[in-house]
Length: 346
Image (tube, rainbow, N blue to C red; front, top):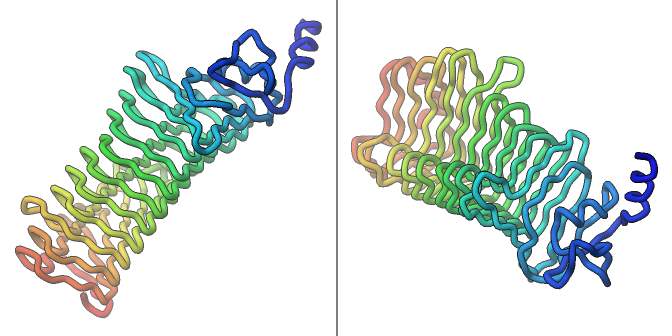
């Protein structure tokens, strides 16, 4: 065993290369590149880099070490994902990993990037499409997603469940079940991104434990033409959740634009400086429903909706902190069943 370990170490390098003209029998150097990501990793030192030299498909891979896998701009680095497999499995609790410029294409496969254990993961300039389940599934670690394009997946584009921290920036998530979803204590920060034409929700969040509630902040996003709702926050039994939405545009939802549902655990949704305009069939644009649900609104523009502008029912709390513009809504501006707490009126 010692001799084998020494032999492997002697072959490893800080930087390795893959090419369509390479061979997995090569040393993965720039003059003798390998053919697949999986083989290149076995020749790469922890913390090293795997560089794609030319356009082609390089195969699925399991990553259990710190590494960067990168395709330069203009180079197509594909991973075809076939039945009962994932495109990339990430499974090292101590690893720092970067995936840059990869295209992950479902061909009957399950998950594009499956994150079961990691310290820090950066997903940059990646495209993930056609997966049977999630495009990106996260159950551990700190994950940053930037400049991604996520489309036509059977489940959610981004799915974060448990004690994870996820930052999403400059990303498009379209034609999935939901654009992004956060559950059971996940923390999400989403900025400058678009969630469009998804079958359920643009962005969805659901409650977590008392000690680690689900917390999501959305800033400068667009949730447009989603079949169900643009933004939905759910309280759950013994669960806690908060979602803050700022400087955004929620348009074209078939049902509500924004809704918070309560349960025994409180769920607080705060909306400010946001435009809500939906063509849905008789559903209020911004709604709070159920004991434990709280909606706080300030400086929003709620116009041209097919039903009410604001709606509160079943023991929910609605706080209007002023300067909301509510007009041209079929059914009126505000309907409440219970107490509305105004701070400066609508």
